[in-house]
Image 1 (spheres, one colour):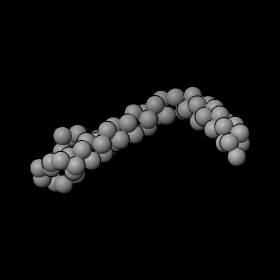
Image 2 (spheres, one colour; image 1 turned 180 degrees about the vertical axis):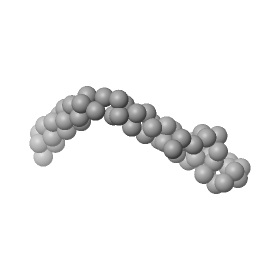
Image 3 (tube, helix red, strand yellow; image 1 turned 30 degrees about the vertical axis):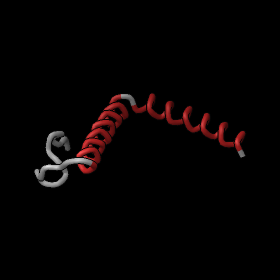
Image 4 (cartoon, one colour; image 1 turned 135 degrees about the vertical axis):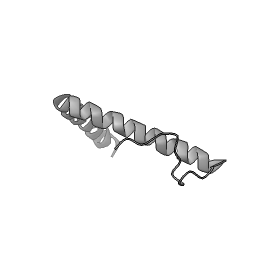
Length: 66
């Protein structure tokens, strides 16, 4: 489901200060999540390969640290 990025999470209430920054961050995270989902749907094998490579590198770094 794609939502209007200009609508706030507070049902249309005007947000200011910290709340508007949080609402903007929520929109950015949702947008990034939508892009990631679209990428995985288009290229599932590439996504699995990237995840495996990232996990391997992360595992190697973690074993060196501790």
